[in-house]
Image (cartoon, rainbow, N blue to C red; front, top):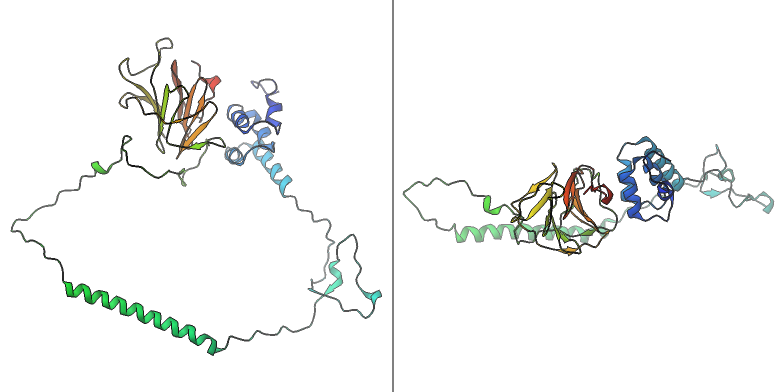
Length: 330
C-alpha cells in the first residue's frame, strides 16, 4: 500500500462499482492511486481527460493500456496475400473448379482482376442543363435591378438635413463606465462556457448543475459564480476561535477567488441566495465551480485551480481545485 493511503482505498480505486464522485476525490487527493483510477473501467471521460493532462508516466501507461483494450483489431483471421485484390470471382467451367471457403472466410487468392473495360458515363445533355442556366441568369438580373432601384430611391430622398452651427464643438471621449457590467446588474446574460483557449485542469465532477447562484441547504453560505470569479458570503460566522481574518461583526464576510488566488472581500455585502445545493452536489458556471458538503462549501477556478473552502468557523485558500472536507482544518 502506498504511503499515506488509507487502508482499502486502493481496492476502491480499482473497483468498477466505486461512484464517479469517489473516484474523482481519490484522483485529486492521492496521486499514487491515479494510475489505478485511470485503469478503472467506470472512470468517466472528463476525469480521464484531466488525468491525461498531468504528465504522469504511470497514468499515461494505464491510459494507453485502456485504449488498447478497447481498440484491439482482430487481423489474424485474414491470410496474407501478394495477389492483387479483385472485385469479381474467377470464372470457372465446373463445380469442381469453384473456390472453396475455409473457416467462414473467402481467400483473397480466389479473386482476380477482370479485363472488362469500364464503360464511360455519358455527360448530361446540354439541353437538360439549359433551364438551369436560364433560371440562374434571370435571378442574377433580378438581383442587379433590385440594387439599382435601391440606389435610385435613396438618391431621390436625398440626405437628411443637418443643423449648421457656427461654433466648432470638440467631441469628448465616450464614457464607457456605464456600460461596464457589475455583479449587481439585473441584466440577464447568456450562460458562459469554459474558455476554449485555456486548458481546464481542475474540472467539475460529472453531473454538476449549471447555475450562477447557489446556497447551502441551511442558507448560511451563499455563493455567486461569475464565469471566471466565484464569491461566497456567510450570513453567520464566528472566526474568533480559529483566529481567521473577517470583515467585522457588522459587515458581511465574503471570500472570493478568480485566476490569481483567493482573498477576503468586505465590500460585497451579503450575497443573494440561489439554487439550494444539496450536500454532495456541485454547481458549475463558466470557469468556476462550487461543491457543497455537510461541513462547508468548496469553490474553485477550473482553469487555474485557485479556490477556497469556508464554513461558519473559518476559511482557507487553495491552489489545486476542490478542497476535500477532511482537509479544511477548522
